[in-house]
Structures are given as structure tokens and as C-alpha cells.
Length: 327
Ligand code: VTB
Image (cartoon, rainbow, N blue to C red; front, top):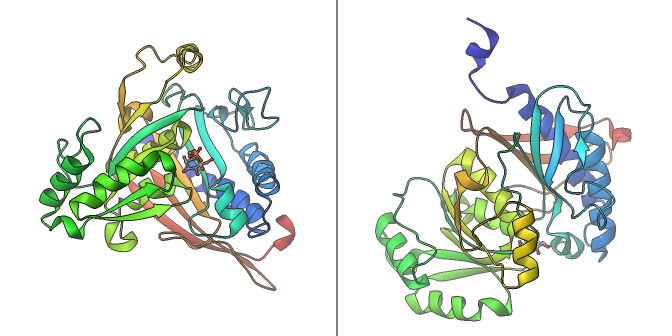
């Protein structure tokens, strides 16, 4: 039996462990600036740290979801090549600090996030909004529908879960654009967890409602965050539907240049993140699933979730870093 047969198909599983260092390092860098009110500085140190660690990986990587276009983002811009130039050709989606405002205010659920997939497998989403709806694993495909009303989705989910609607909690970004959605969800009797930022975490939280208290994610957030969340669900299980909001000719043209031919298309998880996917996220601030970085006088502790689609393994890695000079 060859080594490949023994370890199963897919991206090298060692790479998934290597990926942990990438988000750990970004998270530690950002966590040093928790609660300082400086979003830009926290983001910048996370970007620098993530880039340094990504360039140590044995990959020929291309950033497809990154910090922005080449002219607006000096580092980890879309199209930037990362890795040591050897090994597999991969697409990378990243957010070195998902929830810059959360980190600056030291509120829950800021994450350092990266997803890696076989080349050509990640949706090259422009940096526009995306309407999203997501639930965790174990449900039939017809339970949620982005084109159904919020009430229909909540009621169908309650029925499928076998609970009363009042037992359902939806996670929604606290934004004025969601006023009607919030009213409609409350109208069903369901509860809402309003979050200030961080909808990658919001979507992932639906995969473990017993732990997080969240059953469904609904509403409009960033499209890049949609692709990252889809990559995570490809590994854990669960469903997401997303539709880009291309409400101006400029956005439609930008999307078309990135290969989006149908502006109204609804993307499911396996259409945003195809093929083999690896995903890692490290907590920056304490959250519902991941603890934030902890600093003590002689060590730094990080908490990371690392996922692999080909085996559907969900690993949680709590690491105590004693070589503090490295960070
Ligand atoms: C969300 C949120 C992110 O962007 O995707 C949001 O989850 C969407 O944009 O953490 P608005 O803030 O304009 O509503 C973030 O806040 C990241 O910037």
C-alpha cells in the first residue's frame, strides 16, 4: 500500500497541521493589540504574521480571497503568491483578523482564519456583500432556502429539529439593513443573537448549537467571509447558501471580471469551496467555540480548530508556546 493510499486521498494531511501555525501566529500578534481601539494596527500585525508563516509552507499558493486588490493591499492581496514555491498548487482564502472591530474593542469571537484548497476550487468572490443563510449538519437539503421568507426558514428548521420555534436562535449581524429580517424572525417567536461583526464565526457556530446556542445564521455580510465559512462547512458538515449582492453596474462588472457570469446565482458550500479543503481558525478573543489567546509570564496559549474535508476530521488544538521569542 502506498503512503497516499494509507493516509487517504486529498491534500497532504501534514499540511493541515502546518496550517495551525499560520493562524496561531496571526492570532497571537493580533491578541497583543486586543482592546486598544486600533483596528488598523491589529489587522496589520496579523497580516504580517500570517504572511511570514504562510511563506514557510511547502506549497505553491495563490491568494484568491485576501486583504484586497493588489493596489489597495500591500500584503496578502488577491493574486499574491505565497509559500516556498514547492509542493502542491493551492488556492488560499484568508482573513488574518476576522473581526478587527471586535478585537479593537476586546469583544467575543475575533478569529485568525485561513482555508486552503486545490487550485481553482475556491470561488473568486469580489469584496461585495453576500446574502447568506446557514445551518449545521444533519438536516435534509430542503430545510432552508435563501428565497423563502425568514419565517418559513425558521419554522421549517424548528420542525426538522423537532422543537418549538421558541427554541430556535438565529445569529444576525447587528446592522440597520437587517431591521426587517430581525422583525420577521422575532415575529416567529424565535430568539436572535445579534453580533457586531464576525460572521465567519457566526456561521461556524451553527454546526454546534448545543455549545454555541446558535441554530441558524441569516443575513447580509461580506462575500469573502461567505467563502471562508463555506470552506469550514465543507469540512464539518452543514449547509450554506449565498448570493452576491451586485446592485450596481460597477459591482457586476467587477464580479464578471472575476468569473461570475450569473449575478443572481445562489452558491452552496460545495460551489464556494470545491475539491479538497483544509481550514484553520485560532481564537483571538474568547468566543463561543474557541478561547482567545492567553498570555502568561512564561507561555502563550492558543486554541485552534483545524479541519480537513477529505476525512471530515475536526481537531481542536490547544497549544502552549514556551518559546516566546518566536512571537
Ligand atoms: C461581516 C462581518 C465581518 O464585515 O461580514 C461584515 O462578519 C460585513 O460588512 O467581520 P459591514 O461591516 O459593512 O456590515 C466584517 O465586519 C469584516 O469587515
